[in-house]
Length: 317
Image (tube, rainbow, N blue to C red; front, side, top):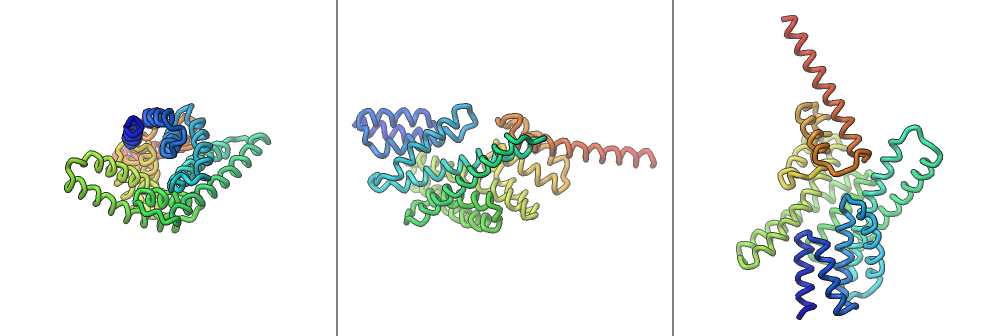
């Protein structure tokens, strides 16, 4: 009975985003049964979630998640090995984000030194390796016959991100549209379930919120891809939808500010770029922060030039 209670508590904490507490509850399960597959897998996923945070401990936790899930994906796990495979792919995707950030930081350094060049080569190599590993993991889960919608969605979103990283923008957009259709179906099902089963409504609300978080990630990516395809109006529309779903999503403000700068909507671009800089938790030397500051200065210059032109026109009249 205690084991079941700990498992239930862990699952609830995890769904609510309390990953430290979830990890502790799975620890209690393992104290009773050290061989419990679900608890081992749960702890691996909790470590992955903690590794996604912007904190000094995050990289260490991500490395722990990778080690834990690498072992589990080679075991049978009573039919749950595909979940370990998915977790491992997600860990690799997070490493991709971190190495991409590292590459951009190193590329921005000037003047370059030989040590920097060697470090840059290493970072690029590791980025490519992690991309391959993430892609293989997502593809494995998608082709394994797993039918649960949320796991399919996670894999499709991952494959869309990877295609964008590789520069295959049309493939990224194709995957994203595939995801969009499925996530809309999921949201409709969760809303219907809330109506049909009011006692279980809190559970379905959590599932709905998870789907909306994933949708926000998808639309943020789509906005970035559409921008690179020079489909600026469509990109802005997607990023508007992101901020309707997740009003505090940092990257969406940056991406929309970039799109609005390209559209020469200077006031709106300034507002978005400044909002990003105000709310971001990224370090001052992070490439996204550096880019936002640079773009904000460019927008401020354009606004100053427009103000000066208006002043001169008023003086002549």
